Image 1 (cartoon, one colour):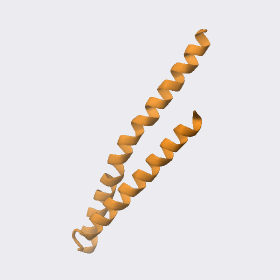
Image 2 (spheres, one colour):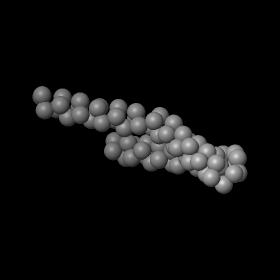
Image 3 (cartoon, rainbow, N blue to C red):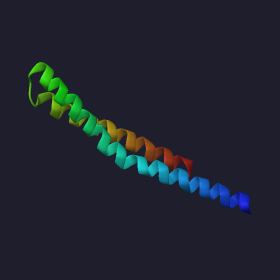
Length: 77
């Protein structure tokens, strides 16, 4: 009985940790794109062209990774 509760608790903690990762991904990707784009804009003097492109790339990468995480969670059930 105690072993079953322990496995359920571990599974719950794993799901909460994985689902907590998604909001941080949705913030981190565009934020990294912002800083990379800002740096490239400063380096090549093309303000704000690179910034917008890299923010969009960061958002798309974050959305793709979030989709993969959700798919993986659904496949485990």
